[in-house]
Image 1 (cartoon, rainbow, N blue to C red):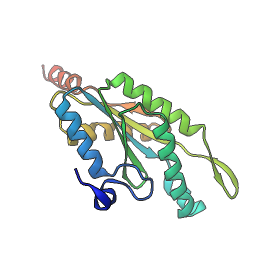
Image 2: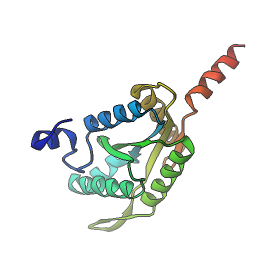
Image 3: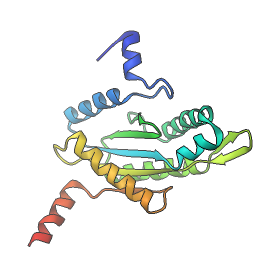
Image 4: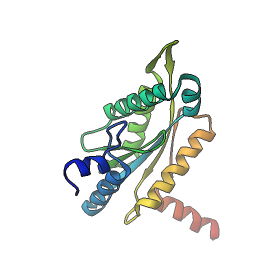
Length: 181
């Protein structure tokens, strides 16, 4: 793992000071090696472009930083919150079953929805949509992220400000097998 200023630059998102995507990848590989199970949560701030358009990018940046702090406050020790890109975040929950990940997602969603972000025109509420997936045995990072992302987009398509969970990997395969028979 990298060290010093070079490491900080490449392992930390400069705006939110959260782990970067590269750092998340490292933590994911570590969780895989431990083989103790894991879940992930994809988070996307709802209508973030409208915040930037109406209030400007400096407030948008402030919202991203505050969202990062609010999400972090809802995590367990050992969970990893990283900036995924733009207004998206990703959470790695080592040793977490789907039910625990769903509890974390709902708690984070409610905390965020009930928080007032200060603007020059008063407080505004910001919501986010969440996609949750539990990693299957030997499931790779890309597959797990795709499943969480699909659940995230289902939450967005169903009205936003909610979480949706992906079916467990073995359950979706069983369903596919049953539909063939």
